[in-house]
Image (cartoon, rainbow, N blue to C red; front, top):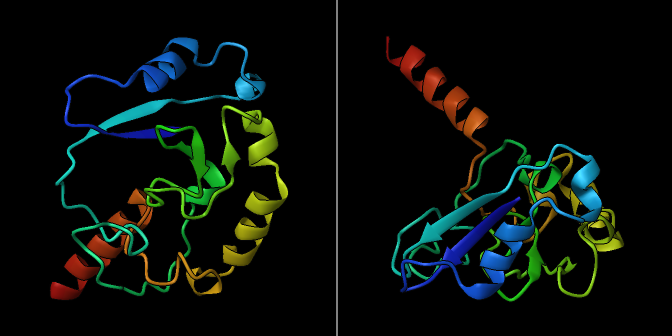
Length: 152
């Protein structure tokens, strides 16, 4: 699970600190190998276009590669909304709310299942993902390695 904390303060907001204290605790997903990452972000930080939702980078890019994040990661924004992935900064693809539903219910829920089914064969099958320039690290590595080989 990845939590992006956008805050002008160099400390975790109370709701995120609570999640960090409880992880994995009594979460429904604790039967699995659960990894928690909390990323402290700066409000003006320039990242990828994040599905064209980044306020300082809305340039669409098209990659003909699958994205694995919706199949491997669960992202929760500070108000408890569960986002499609870490690129879904404001949970535009609302999957549920961690304060009202268990993480297991959200992960296995109809909305999450439908989106994963749509993008299983390509990013172009979901409007949020089609112009996203966020690449899983393994794919990014493969693309960079191929580019370096082509320069030889």
